Every structure is written in C-alpha cells, then in structure tokens.
Image 1: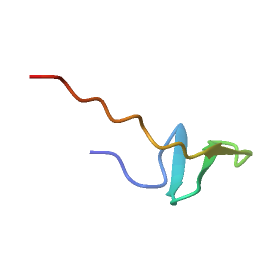
Image 2: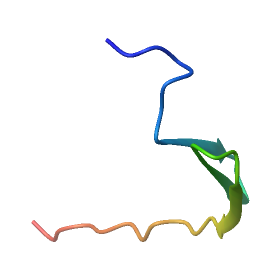
Image 3: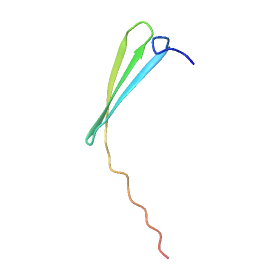
Image 4: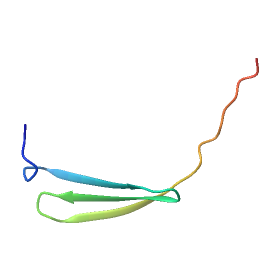
Length: 48
C-alpha cells in the first residue's frame, strides 16, 4: 500500500447539481482546473 504523499496524480471532483468541477494535480504540484456542465440524462421507457 502506498502512502498519501507518494502519488503520480491526484484528481478531485466536486459533484454538484448544476456543474461539476475537476482539479488534477501532478507530482510537481501543477494543477489543471476544469468544469463540466451537468445535463439531465434522458429517461428511456419501453412500450410493453
């Protein structure tokens, strides 16, 4: 098992209702931030 301070990449997700924020942190401490809009998934129904 590895320790928390031994990593290649850490990924953090904020799973909110309207948009999801993502943070990717590399070993060297650099960070990339992104946001993803939340869309409701279509509801599929089957006719019986």
